Image (cartoon, rainbow, N blue to C red; front, side, top):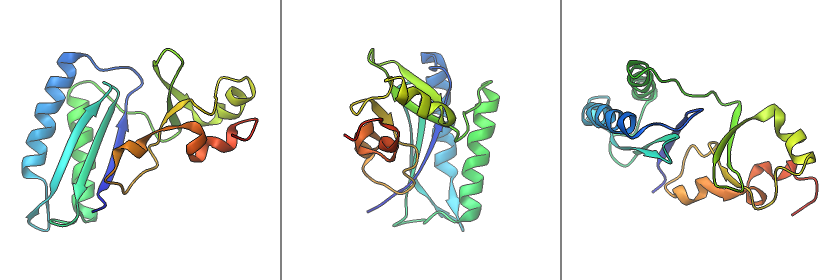
Length: 155
């Protein structure tokens, strides 16, 4: 079953203490997340200390506009309470050769590709997935994503 998926990303890695505090607040939100009075079967996880991934199973409590808005509002409140903010959609995330996760501005991709800093096997975290139950598709080599168009040589 395909799940609704949302991604929130940070410019810098979160500390262990930040992750623990955020996880507790996200669990509290999940326990009361509803759509039209029906609990949303959801999951929130923090990956690589850089990403918050939220998924909702539409089989029970299919998220509606209001419940999606309440989720976004809750995430914003939780992050603000911890002095955090997420990066907007103008950023693309890759893992460099040392496996460090980098936030790149979308506008910079053509120049980075031309300079050879983006390669076919560069690991990309694809935040464009909005409906997936397979998060393994979220981490893909650049050549297997929509970003392949920036490669100077076809993969």
